[in-house]
Image (spheres, rainbow over the protein chains, first blue to last red):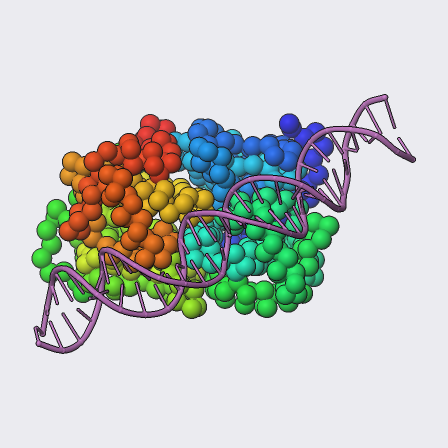
Length: 252
Length: 252
DNA sequence: CGGCTGATTGATCCCGGTCAAATGAGGTGG
DNA sequence: CCACCTCATTTGACCGGGATCAATCAGCCG
């Protein structure tokens, strides 16, 4: 459903995130902003933005809310393979492949921009730095995906959930969605379970363990991390993970 | 260690793989081939080609042997997050980020080509189709990475190992490394365990289960799959997985 | 022959899954 | 305002898949 009223502030997370990857010229920002505002959309909780098997004709950029990339097995088992936070794009360049290999669902009510493929291509063609920033985002996503593999394959439940919380925190920070040592945690325990490869029951018990250890406070959809270093410690969090966010621009 | 004698046939898997993604002009093939032959290297089993934290100054393309991308936790737990097969590149574009977030090890003796970053960039700049083919490869890799997430998070041991074998088979096929219903399986059970997130002991038992069910024959480093459909069935293998290999060129 | 690495087997334990039920927390209509 | 429904969280009891520990076996190489 298209939005009628377009508040320009909604695109800010996108600008913030991409700028952190590559310094964007004001022209680049302006044309990006324009393209985003042109295709605003909303999705309700539980709604698929795009489903496995669909052809990809547009790039979607999340402006607010949380999305989840997920895959399912025939018998219904679901794995959320990544979260998508405000400012991140869903499938930049995915159109280079033939069809979606996974689905994307709105885990909360969400506002996003849909940029048609041709539009997106011309946007990038006219601005190589912008293009590079989007590619960086894609690569960063791959790095996150790899960390999820070791999280699912080698960390035990407590470490796993702790790691996820640390990651969420570090990814929300650059778009200004962390307030002190708290952030919103608007998804259900079922979603967290599917992201960590645990059952809901055991996820719930793991949360209680984390609470009992004083590592997190989680209530009324708000997550507070009294001591991030302590939580990272419990998660075997690598100090270099997501450091990419901050240092990529130093490469060039 | 640089190679002295350069047999041009060694680059064939690369050409084959990239051609499957995008049709390459003969000029593109020739200049790629030239660049590859310029930087031939060898690695012995267990040797890291590049290690987490290293800056990325070159792109590596595997010509023969198997590589593994892996990450480790402080206490030594290791997760192989993906395999790299002949014809695939290790870290095309990884130089856009600041440093390696994972390591790459030779799981068997390997021959690969190292293309310096500047060289690689000019190669791509002169041939947009080649550039697109490399990007496709990167995206395809992300898709594989996502499948590994659900494999690790939601499949039980037997399904997990079965799925890995199916995947290996499907990935080796396009580079001509499958012979009938057999292919080489040159890695240790330890490597397979680290790829599937299992302990060596349990991996071994799972192999026996697969053997007992008649789903695989595995001896003398050779894997035979009498009935691929049956194995895929046991693996809850999605019919669309890796179909990308074959259909991407139809997009344009 | 001795040493090394990898495959295999046995015994035991426990983390995390499953099943089932209870409790809470909105949301809605009468 | 309450009865009712639905969905999310929580708790309890039990079970089993896979980890762990330890020993044995099989090649391979010097």
